Amino acid sequence: MAKILIVDDSRTSRKILREILEEAGLEVIGEAVNGKEGVELFETLQPDIVTLDITMPIMDGVEALKEIMKIDRTAKVIMVTAAGQKGNVVEALKMGAYEFVTKPYEEDVIIDVINKAMKA
Image (cartoon, rainbow, N blue to C red):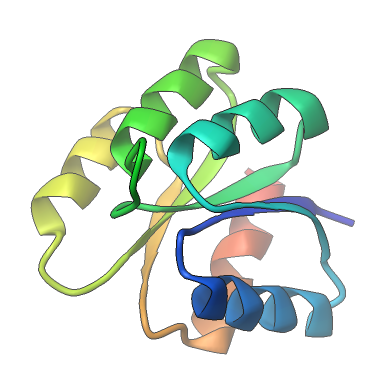
């Protein structure tokens, strides 16, 4: 079973994503409210997959991705984006993000991306 870390400053987004993942039988092992906390939890928890929001306070998702990739070049990070962040998504993919999903969440899309990441 995939162990997943959710990093998003929105409590509502974290709750919705946790419910989608747990209903699909996946294990959410931690949640972080900003990129800095996400990087710290990544080191501590060593999740299989990280969902990483792009727009967050303290440290945004792109900066957090850089730090996670320094820790583990093989990390599977799925970027979460709202509409209008195409430039950030492209940059994140170039830096090693596995894939991206958009808000509002589409349950089947998220589960499909997670399953593909686990097989990659």
